[in-house]
Image (cartoon, rainbow, N blue to C red):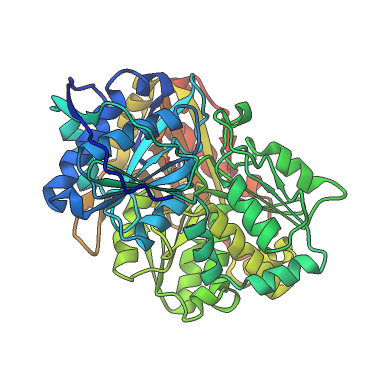
Length: 554
Ligand code: VG1
Ligand code: CO
């Protein structure tokens, strides 16, 4: 279908003015959709990305750019604008996801496999979608991962002085039809959204062993939450691995995710949780978020905490997944994530790394080969196969563990607790807090830090109170104020930070952890209650926000 004609194009310089507030957060720039829909808003950011990367990449004619999104409202419009701008800016090749649909980890895989300069991902991830909800844009670099802070900050600085952007007048490309078209000097190729990613999964996992598991009568339900993973899960689980038809539910990506939050936690994935509690429940339940990088793992009436999931995948990867048969070089977790993975690393004789929140901090460790598997408490797990967290990968990793051990999810987790002990862990989210009140509350807590050592807290004593800062062991870059943490004498912790992904108000995240070598039989709420009480008191949560009860507990 390649079109060899070389239609003349007219490059247009559009004058523009900076918008305030285009600084990216934990993961790209996220705003209300209507904010993104303002004339020039998206174009300013895209041109700013191009201006920054041109400084090091030089002539774009040598380079490939990848574009895809999670299908939320405004996805297609945004992709059309980006195609026009990429052509006007002179990229040699542009790879566009068919239908504009590609999961975040799949974009990462395409960037890596096709040696692209980078990619633009249109997504606000687990945030709700629709004209009155959220939209987002993220730039990933040539390693397939989110741009590091040095790059995102340079992009932000560009947005604050931009005066024009380049585009072309009109565009005649059907992004639903795979194939190449030449526009000006750019070869625009609409690529299959599943191919590269599914091939990569087949290289890593033993599909035959998972197929045998399903053939033995094993049943699962995968909730795609009307988001991007539906087509991937349908193809991999039902077509390739022989899971029963109907295994994938809510499998068609919708612009508003069916009106739900595509956030796979116990609150927003309540339907799936209910199915797993049913008398006729399947053996295994899983869900992914809007852009396919998060995962929720459930057994029958059993929730696997993300920190435990990371530890378990690290524990079993070598035996259960061929892609890791040579063992792991190290593991990494974000600071608020439970320490369960550290104990597995110790047992395996490998290093564990503690990074700030956000996948961008894992990139340099993975590139340098310092770690193989990494994860976050926010339902994010992944490995060196891409440079993003990867929801479907985590589901396949769990299927591999279940196929290898032939035990239930619950038994596998309980065996882990018996061997390693258990990190009793919860994250409490307080959403929609007044932004100023939240800032004042955190500032007040920060002021107390110097005087807290030795104080009683949650049934133990504070041995370290600090604001987490991080120096990247590979490139020496630093990040400060990455969360206030209290480390206690008995190994417990409390961590406080404000979310960097929301679009209205502030969200406080309060994380508590207590480690016990009790085979995991205690009640998590009871174990954590003293920590939570003292954390809220010290924070003066009620006083600053009028709140006591969280919106979501994980
Ligand atoms: C949250 C999570 C963080 C995750 C980020 C992006 O950030 O806590 O672990 O990396 O979302 O995930 P914050 O700043 O709101 O706590 V996703 O799936 O939204 O790209
Ligand atoms: Co996501």
